Image (cartoon, rainbow, N blue to C red):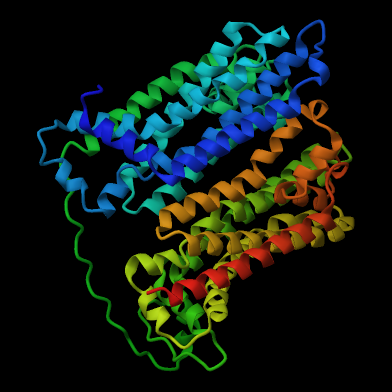
Length: 559
């Protein structure tokens, strides 16, 4: 295996990048911070060793969340990066066999994730001197981390064989990991325990198997089996016992499919037929110019930002026909969610007086997660995409000031995100039919979603101005917004181990918690402060915008 030149090249090139140093540093910094925060005062430990096991569980879950966060950065662009650099075809003209090429790329892509897991092993071993934790417990948690890194990294590598651009592969990988790690585990969580409760034996078994696909659920069932977040069907094995064989089998299947995809050199892309502009004039169909890509567009008006118009006319993800399709899908999903919400409220309102508030909390959190997951895909390529294609040289020659260029890019990211939020808003408004007193809460949720849209759009523009590649800017934007909205929720699993002041400070920057607080969730209202959250996120948004303008001014002056 070591003699494989692709493995040596991939590992060495990955370890020599600045991205590797930053990710490794962040990983160690977070693990050390968790150890310091969770370490008992004066090294005292309870007799039963329960506190040591809780510390081990939080450290294991924290490292797992970091692996989920960093996996797409190294695996999703493993093959698309070769294609973008025009070096993929040259691999098939070497003396290496296709199986050696696939094996080398897979091992090279997963090597850094394995190094991350091994670097976090000393932090897990720190719980051993406290007592109550055996060497087998640490070894079992490390094994789940290694298996999860390989399993999730293989998903990113599979997406890399199917996608054509690195930034698209990263976006798809983050979406798939969100479904695999969080959506699949939802049936086992307290917020949805009724899903398992009201199912038959077969239904419970199916949902239990689906939840076992999540490495998060597997880790919870191993290190914290008594947690309310790890309770499945009583007639089924624990989640980790099913996760191990299922993840190994799926990893082998994905590796076999990658071998099948790469058994032949990639064919050159087919030439697309040239589009012909049609001047249809003023008619009844002129109303649909937004979704008609072949209609000749009107000249740019004096009051319009030409950069904004250019973005909507040239970027595929912002063109009207694709944007309207996405909004239509969100509307369809919103209508379906409206029916589910109404049925759920009608079915369970007699059991709990706070069921409507819980539904509002779930829908508000879903809307924020939608913005968080789609925002980087739209905003992270605003500036670096022009630098990759050579359009930036034309932007430098324009008489437009730097702030107007950034403003046009910024608006091009905000408008589609606002349309997506409006398309899912009916799922929240349907709750007013059951309880009109929710109207102030819905208004507060809209404030949080609006601020989240501005923050995510500005973060994408900020990273896009500092990185020259869209894939790198997309990865860092996702890393920032996902860590703020998902990783900080980890403290809810062990509220008694963290101080109240620390939890409040962490939740000040979490848009999901802010949305839940605005919707009236009692679980987070004791920690969250909506006004402080809006002020901090507004200040961060303004700061990143000013820095982006300064960076664009610098790029325009560079020779």
